[in-house]
Amino acid sequence: MTSRPEHERRVRRLVEEYRDLPADRPVRLAKRTSNLFRSRTDAPPSLDAGGLDRVLSVDAEARTADVQGMTTYEDLVDATLPYALMPLVVPQLKTITLGGAVTGLGIESSSFRNGCPHESVLELEVLTGAGEIVTATAGNEHSGLFRGFPNSYGSLGYATRLTIELEPVKPYVHLRHVRFGDFDTFCTALAQECASGEHDFVDGTVFAPDQMFLTLAAFTDDAPYTSDYTGMDIYYKSIRHRRSDYLSVRDYLWRWDTDWFWCSRAFGVQRPAVRRLWPKRWLRSDAYWKIVAFEKRHHPMARIDALRGRPAREDVVQDVEIPVDRTPAFLRYFTTEVGISPVWVCPLRQRDPEVDWALYPLDPAVLYVNVGFWSTVALPDGIAEGATEGHFNRRIEAEVARLGGHKSLYSTAYYDEEEFWASYDSTGYVRLKKEYDPHDRLLDLYAKTVQRR
Image (cartoon, one colour):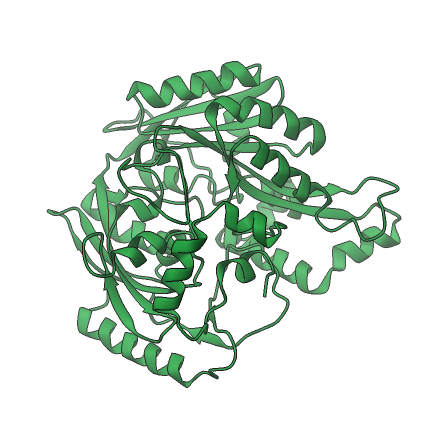
């Protein structure tokens, strides 16, 4: 852990670095790891906040943690579990940072009862676009920034420190995998299970239109055994074959990270012969991400596919949120028109119905379902020249809008500017932008997430 005086020293240094960067060029945050799937068209000056990556303190009695903004959830969980506590929502991948999950949103299987990570923030310290450090809470003079920061993706400033709520845990998690044969009964059951109050965690996996599973999980003090999905065994494959399972609480939180959900299969790591030779320390999402980043820069596999006469492929990497009663319609559309499988589903409800999160508008009365899909899809033959980029993604965006949903902005988006701002509080955002970034040193939300500058 790092002391508060040391934190303040590092923040002062960060402010000085920020003020020394060229004032006529936009600034972005330099990160050693990234979970974003947006390419950038240029490389603006980078701000190194790598020194702000520690847990400052854990207050077991108050059930809070004081954490620097670049701290990964892996490090945060390692600091809280010895106190039998965890963050209210722990996003699925170890290297997601706390500041990143708040400014860019996060979700997991506790989100049906705890919402998103930003909803458990009590205090938010931000380096604003104006080069100032402000502390925002729900009730102080920076309350507008506190409510407008989630989903702003660094366009208003960067979180340097956050105080968050924690909740108690038990040593183990008991999982039940319940199979369904059609989308309607699956989504009806999902809504019922979320309303029952019987579970600590709910998520699901769609393998095919007639094969999908709800995973219903709860803390428990005792376990007759625990499974290990950090080596040869693969978690998502177990869902189809096990009705019941037990994991340590830590292994439950990171059950998806070892194989990046199921995306490790693209690297051959799920083949037993390869997996035996693959270093165990590389069985984690950030190792796979480095391979993806190399492909994005140099395109070796795309070149090989072209030489072999294979069709070009489009990245279809998205998380979308759909009202639960319209989710069957989206899943039918998606399996027919796109065809990626498996697909992850995770229920989500806003935790406090009285709060207005300006850039992340959810109807507090509605249970939403996050649908996550991360793969590539072969482009159809005869597609018109110039229409290849976004062929599938644009259609998905249109269907999500038709069904009254919206999508996360961590990946590529194709909205035009008018359509984009119709989904967000543009008036409130512009007001915050003028107050906290009056000289436009940070890219605005549309430029950063859609234009990919």
